[in-house]
Image 1: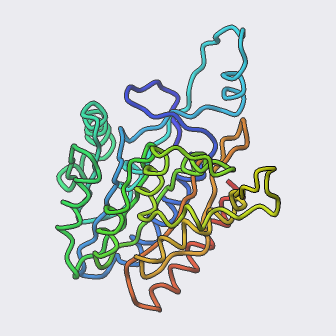
Image 2: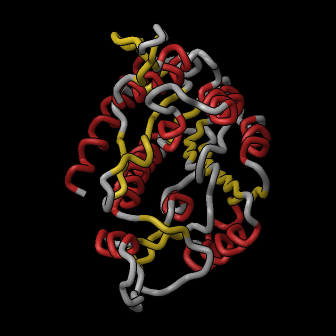
Image 3: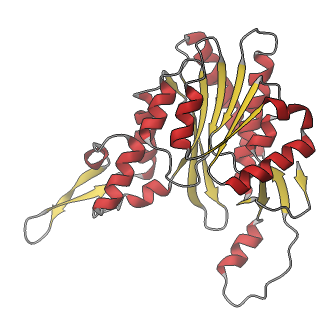
Length: 299
């Protein structure tokens, strides 16, 4: 999967990127195989497609970037295919690659023409804010189609209303790389700016988190005022998944927290959810997701 040549337009990632791509590709592989001989239209949607390539930094590189005074050394980066290019290894009837940056779209087109020329006619490139363009794509999916979707926002771009629109579309299996930078906006002592409150509410679709994610301290200060502390990190993650459960028919209890290797700090939570109401389909997906996430321990 890796290439040792510098390419323009690539993103930067680390060891966590390999785990993320492993999970997505393993699901892609099984999903395409299960639906191989069916007559349904198979659709793949990449909501933040990028250029299709990622430059990997090693753990040593990341630590070195934190140190001041080191001589800059010429490094040959490892280039890997991102989720958009990986999806083209598997047979879908239509591919939708959404991206805001026109340069990245052009690089993605070049990479597809070079590496998957036979698939280019099936690919739809859509430029624009994914909160808008995803609504357009969702509108094209009928109840007779099956759609696998991957949302990998660069930061806190994905609005709850967009996620809600996806949840109303039948036949969607969704992997959402949820940005844990949101947790950093939720100050441990509940001293949160109004701007950050609005950002968190836009991502979670409610302002109830302000009361749900804080516990009253047993101590009060000398003025008799109450203090509130944020719940444990794992409880925040549970709450986020509980929010997904309010709109999706099924949300997997298994998810993967991806960490920055140099700092060992959580960066993302890769979550799986689906709109299919069939219990047999949900049970099948549950076992598959559990097995794939467990397999990342060996990656």
